[in-house]
Image 1 (cartoon, rainbow, N blue to C red):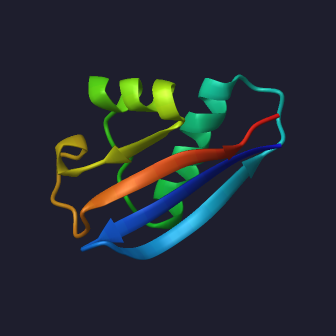
Image 2: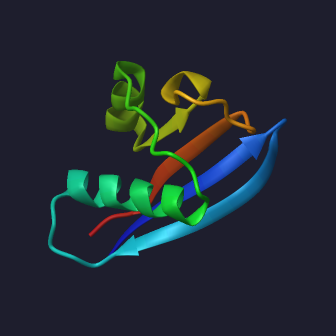
Length: 88
């Protein structure tokens, strides 16, 4: 089972959080992108742009934060954080 946790944070408070589970035989990368898309769809957010810093953080820690620089439009929170909490 692959599980990806997402949470919206504003002023050090979690506004929303959710866990996306994926039992498919897809690659880890596909599961991450599909999970991020599911989280953004559920919260009516545009999908953030992956910057080099996000890719580096995610490779090292299985976790990254998307801040204002990752979106074209204004966001009403400080960051969206995603983290892999379980892998097959």
